[in-house]
Length: 357
Image 1 (tube, rainbow, N blue to C red):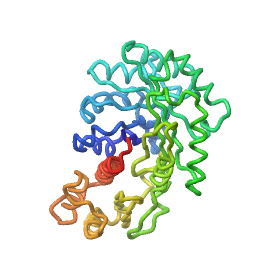
Image 2: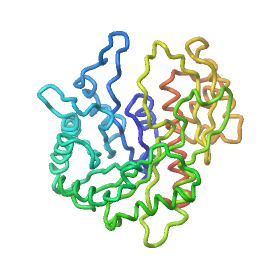
Image 3: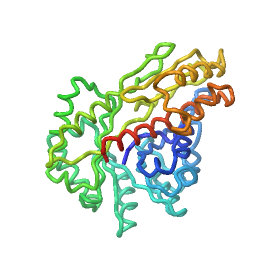
């Protein structure tokens, strides 16, 4: 399975919904519940936690159609409680259960006690098919005692290794030199004496720019170092090693800054994943110059050797229609789903092409 970490926002959940079924069947998204947006005009949160979470289960049901996913609440303030002092974890998983949806909660050894209790209650509601995701950072992974910390958490939650999906989230590291980094990573993973007993192991990272302000106007490519790292790690596996699943942050950086949209002038951009890089076409700000500029951006990728063809994914079809003038130029969430939809399709196909899980 491919494990993209995505924020549950319109562009991202539309990208998942519009994948072909054969691609969906190979994807296990790790969904981060996004933070509540800040109302900069009033100086308060834009919503209550109750309103913020009210449609999550319904959207998950409609967009992901009975498939499983990891769900993480790490971006929410740990003090949040819904009316009735209900923990967000408890609320979401209760709502999912009511409509027959199955998802897997995410935690780590360093979440607070109320969070861990909520996770434990959710896991142990299903004695027949327990499952949880432990998400560790690279900083966590290189701790001397991390193996015992994970064992302690497993005991606290009353789960066995075969019920744990271990996700190593490297965030956005300095990848170079790739070979040395892969060796350090492999040695750190192998500190877990029972690594073969876990249900799955996934390695996640990204080299996507932190800000589109770092990207120049026009078209350029940005190296996907996370893909190179995975290939390096994979190529040096021995019969004694566990084969990890590949994960990334799709076409985004892990950091989700809260910014006053009244002051921002975001530029038109298309993020298009190619073999070992992203092709990025960037225009001028859409507030002053509109979205028609996307037609020229789309023409640039369609006329290049990188374009996979209109039939490759729903995202590719949208790009082709826009370049031809037969489709809409959309808005900013449109181009997030378009790029993410193509990216996920591309990664699934690439993993299949060399036999990775």
